[in-house]
Image (tube, rainbow, N blue to C red):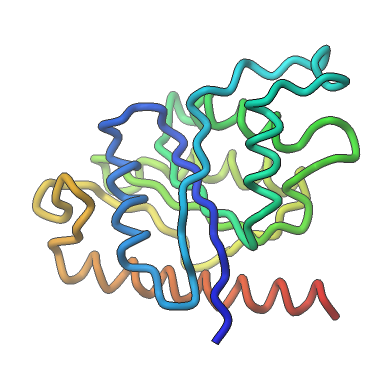
Length: 188
């Protein structure tokens, strides 16, 4: 069995983010064919085209981390009906300089948690538009808008609700299938 290395990016910079808890839960629930590890974005400076000729170490580290993994999972909240600025900044760094887009062809999935039932839906729609422009193939279904409650998740990322656990396992299995199909198609 092939194990795919999946880098995940948490769109929130907060150490106490419910999306960080969701990311931890996903790493714990990942099927044997997916090995998840975080790609941090906290220390990135703001993207500036003037730095394309001399990429800062933080930008290079991000691009290298994305290029080393087989696939990318983005776990994000919704800020003001869109994606957080830190996440957009990371995507800008990853996709630049021109013709050196680290996201091209990278199998990608999007998921998010909020206290509302579908609180990340608009952010995910915006993120999908950005990822499409960056030529990152995306898992289209199932969509995953996770409602966060303390009776569904423990603070250390254990899923304590059986229905939520089954949904997340199904989501991860679909992502595993998508990653395999996408990578096989690319190799053909």
